[in-house]
Image (tube, rainbow, N blue to C red; front, side):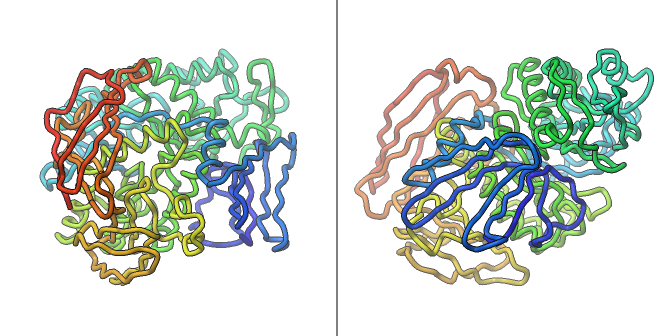
Length: 595
């Protein structure tokens, strides 16, 4: 409270720190939840013109919201819990579909992987350093003069061969795509778009031009279903060369020669709209076009990343928080950012681990990988003119710490996948603020430096430089220190030693958590072995429902999945029953580890 915000998707290159004058960023999700002592409710202001939210800034006695144009159209949700509000909101705006399993692995990216050999060397470094990795991202340097849906044949002479070699190593490629389309005669995207009136126009009916990475550029009219289908069809060019996902960037839309004027016209399907109405949903509609194109052309669950979004984009895309910096303030900010996005219906989210701009250092990178090891989107990304931040670029201690937490992430991927299954049915985020599950506890209402993974794992990262002791708040109940297995009664603060190689992690007593053995890559369909980590505390036995499918396509929608109900007693004796059995593959090995 005490701030005012503007919903207007904005690519602002300034360092983003806590500042009352900085009101807008990349995403516009005009939804908030209010928790009072006597009730909880939510409001979704469904207006994608520029909107403003005064959250106790003008007066501590009230909040207000309004729009520059359009209709005063808002939804009021009420219930007994925060979860009730999120469930209702996502029932309206949509829920994130199940992702492909490999997308939950580790992603490595940099604006600057500029040749086929460099990408191959990068993959080999992961193997040589015993680091799991499932995805490498290629930024704008793979394109021919930054023209979308092209490949620079000098730098990447055989993208198909590159994809094949990496896939044999268990690594997939994701490529960036921007909306700005280069003005160039003979370029198929430009010529097709001009011929068919696919681009935004000036008020006089001329094609509107601005400048982005390719130079003079035009902007697709994603408000048109015809244009979305055309744009989506272009994904086949990349998919046919082995690309596994598409990363949408610069889609606020960003431009270098000033912002697009409010009166730029998007003709649509015979329903023209001005830019002032389209701006906040431009990225959303681009994500929809990309998602539908990949789904049609591959038959797989599409993997799309977007920088800009609006309410409901979760149906089509993951998201990252944008161009952060390698500073401690941004590590600290990453936790509430991801929690807020999750509670706003965007569960598949992450930050640029290590920071995008500036130069990271061993301590900051170590603490960032610890803080992010359960973030749904798990990607290290940085800028061309900053220090390289692959973990082997630093000392052995940093590499060892990095490896520990990447491997920890891979161990718990089946648990994360279960949470995605839960989210697809209920809208509940993957990582959650403590207040979601302990909303009557006043100590957690403004807790921004811890988070829950589902309701069974509590993570309390160190986010301050030079700190080696962490004050951790444990809610009511029994909590087990993941590293020492010490049992602690909650409802209090504790001081946990946290040297540079330790991120405090706690397991809720009586939890069963599914895990995998050590893997370097996520195999199609997942591991053949499932481990059930069991942490008995007070109950005679504990239960857990686990989801399994092929992790790749949409067969689960026709019932091709398994639901296991596990029951474990204090001695680790396991009983298994099937709530649903529609997937022919079963685990070869099931075992219980009691802690």
